[in-house]
Length: 425
Image 1 (cartoon, rainbow, N blue to C red):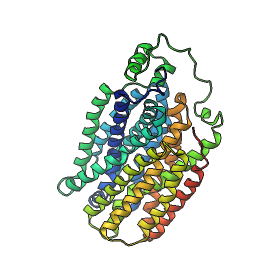
Image 2 (cartoon, rainbow, N blue to C red; image 1 turned 135 degrees about the vertical axis):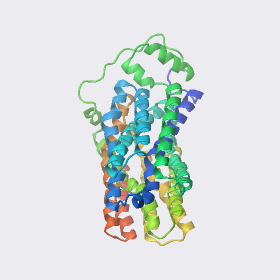
Image 3 (spheres, rainbow, N blue to C red; image 1 turned 45 degrees about the horizontal axis):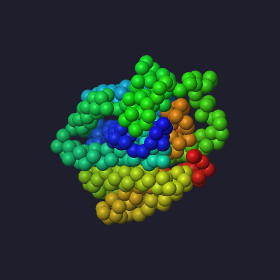
Image 4 (spheres, helix red, strand yellow; image 1 turned 180 degrees about the horizontal axis):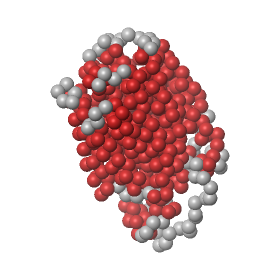
């Protein structure tokens, strides 16, 4: 079998996708733990809703920097290299978060956590898309993105047990320690991208390529294929060539709207549940239930996309997400129905949104995939930054919950309509 994309699943393919899943799982824990400690943090440091929204957005701003400026370097220096550097940054920043003394210091530490998380997210998405068999590439990307909510579920249950008897700082330090341990595992087990080795040809590239190809059940190469130097000009402008202009604009716009809603939801659900009169433990479990739905929804999008056009699947989930938002915010429900509504929001909102990662991976070819994914998700993070901030101002202004959730349902409908127009192979 001469083409890695045509060869079947192998142990190495499964290992790479599994490692990317674990990376994303820990990234979800690193980033979303703030939403679980928000009720305690706001009390202990007397943080207003407006400042809490800005604190949520610090890591999101860092993620935008990671996606736009750092992650595209993976096309030049290697995806494995960038993942290792970013994971080291996350581990150090998470541990430092536990030693901060004021909101500004915590905001700065969270900004660097975001840089690392954004870089890892782009690089591992490109890796998963490349190492999965072509038929299952969208499923592999969807499965990897499901690691994010799965990690958040674990963080939620740990937070529910730890916060009543320990400080929120100890929780951040513990998660940072886990990130450092994962760094060692990734260093020894994660191979480099084949497309990077073929296009950039670092030292001993042929030997490294053949070692990986054997594990993928492909024939070894006698020599490297003819060298094709990268096209001159800006790598970003190249995203708008070869018929990709309109799809890129539609994708970037849809991601921006999706992020605006997504990070409002994941940042504010626990706090809003507390505001509605439920205890802190119930609020944390509501966040966990949301992320459980996100896990199933994200996996479902990738699985359905094996048989249906990916853009249609994503659009359908986003449309259903608007309805779920209206139900969750518009009806006063008992605890068990609140948890069920949170589950449905997770399935549709994050399940639909995470389909954008697979869309970006399919839209851009391997030589520009990290750049394409990074800019699509990086530009879109403008919405991620403003989503929690706008939510903070709405909550601070005592706007009724049904109106808040109705406001956030509108971008989902617009994003669903634009996604339908995106066509990928």
